[in-house]
Length: 192
Image 1 (tube, rainbow, N blue to C red):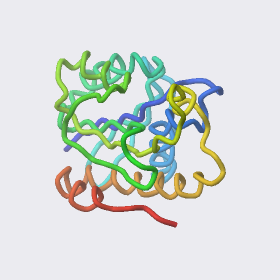
Image 2 (cartoon, rainbow, N blue to C red):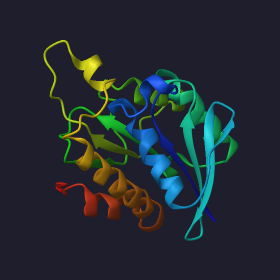
Image 3 (cartoon, helix red, strand yellow):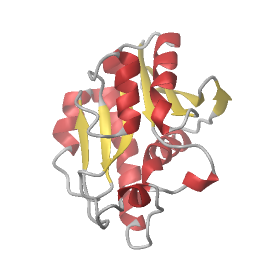
């Protein structure tokens, strides 16, 4: 039976709820809810286990804070004996507009501290990721406030739609494979 590790990146604590940086948490929350699972507190992460079309999925939300996400990823990958190409990390992406997502089999951390730490802990950048576009509408020097800021009311309907579609993307990756998911979703421009 195929095993997958689905990782939603974010920061724990009420301060970070509904912020752009926590979109990974929001996506895996929606995925687990759709599949009628639930999270439990465990080592370095909140963890849920879901069976989907003959696949075993371990879904984690690291409780290490973003900058140490790699510790949780490495621990659960080793514990569940999951290959690196069967990981999917969901992460916010400044370089993509709000109406896009990008699925990649590997790549640089592009300045994202969570991805940098995962790369450091795995000793490789060869792991799949789903980059959720958050746009970059902030003044010079305002990046941190923007990323850690909450979605505004105009953005929220599109964000909600993209969260639902990201749940479908996870299902596509797990059931049909990364290439199929990239072909199906990487060119989509999401609109209401």
